[in-house]
Image 1 (cartoon, helix red, strand yellow):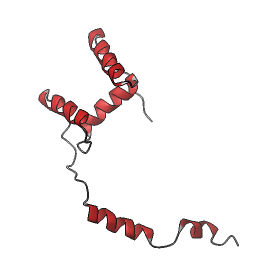
Image 2 (cartoon, one colour):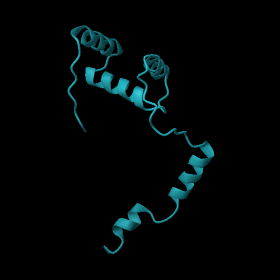
Image 3 (cartoon, one colour):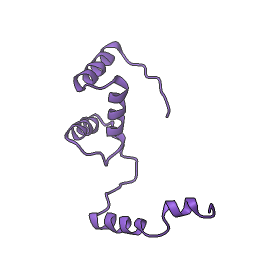
Image 4 (cartoon, one colour):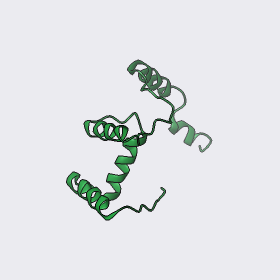
Length: 98
């Protein structure tokens, strides 16, 4: 996990701390959520949509990443079935130990 130092005006810091407190999360968790909302287009919730809308309005929304979309349910189920086949982990671990 990485760390960063952030310098901000006292008034901004006060507002950010208040926002974190209103949500019942630490300052670190709140800033992490805002940064995720700014950079991950796949996040979905009413709160994240609101944050992303504000960031877009301010011209701060990261749109440099590759567009991604969620796989269909059918594709996920097909991958799940394929992953369920083959040699089990138990067999791989015990192989050659007997």
